[in-house]
Amino acid sequence: MINRLRAAGRILLEAVLVAAVGAAFAFAANQVSPRGLVLARNYFPTGTNEAVRMPTIPVVPDNVASTNPAPAVAAPSPVSPTNTQEVPWIDGPQAMQLFHDSHLKPGAVIFIDARDEGRYQEGHVPGAYEFDPYHPEKYFPEVLPVCRTAEQIVIYCNGGDCDDSKTAALLLKEVGIPDQKIFIYGGGIAEWTSTHQPVETGARNSGTLKIAIQ
Amino acid sequence: MTNPDPIPKAAVVNLFTVLARWLLGATILYLGLNKALHPVDFLKLLRQYDLTPDALLLNSLAAALPWFEIFCGLLLLAGIAVRGTALTLTLLLASFTVLVLHRALLLGVAQNIPFCAVKFDCGCGAGEEFVCRKLLENLLLLVLSGWLLAGRGRQFSLRYSLKKPPAR
Image (spheres, each protein chain N blue to C red):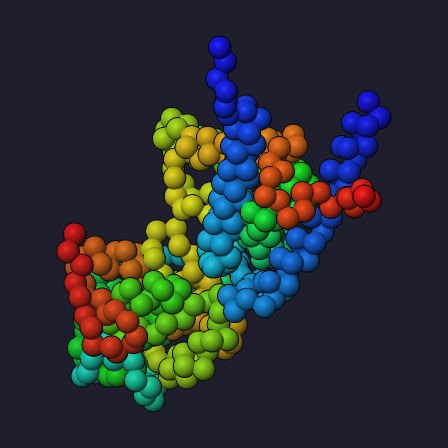
């Protein structure tokens, strides 16, 4: 009996040792890993979404999908959310109108893809900027200047219950992008492809377009 | 007349036990690697369990668990501190199983579908799957852990126990 208790005690001690060394190893590995999480970061800033009507968009000639920086043009004020944590939504037809309307000047409307790099490469709204909100430091240098000059910023992720677009929107608001021009396309890439809209594969402006056939 | 060269039963059991240790180690290693390669995805899945509202604690769990599994998987494959590792894994697996079961029950009620028709990504590292299948897999892993915890699988071990070996 005593021997069994001693053996159980030894196993327990061994398990505690394994757990302690394992935990130290795990945190060290996360620290070293290029994909590791930043422990102190809040990856899920809270916020609620509210569907609103899309604002009137100024009609100027050019391609909507082009996202080259351009001086801001005075646009009619969009419907402002009543709470700073709320981000207005647009639906599929509104997003497609923004994309297809050829009367906008370059850079007036930009699309931002809030999914991770792999999914972005597989297919995104043509001309959309890549912005993984869980690694913002990687994308801010490219995305922030165009967000500052754009009049409308449409952010999307997978669609459905995906809330990465909301996270991205809140991050942009935190760094000073006016919330009046940020919109979330709730249907996301799932709705975009299901309605046979073109997607661009690979890098932004790679020129490789495809249309999903479902 | 007896068979002159029977295969000893103990040898067969030992062989199976070593295979069980390798199987458990490789599975845990694989599941841990899948999560460690996509830590943000794992964090999002972990968040669905509402374990804690504290961001630091949730991040720490999501950051450490995958690598901890990798560590345990490697220990089992190498045969180091086998029983201690098996006990640790048993506790981990039992906790995960309870969490998955609880979430599946909630989903089943919310969707008004039979329990075994519930399909979701539990964050276990194998993607979306039916809950009954997931629970059976976990049960199998628990049995393997328990088998190792009982003191089997000493063969091909680098250091089966961390206890100082007796002086010769």
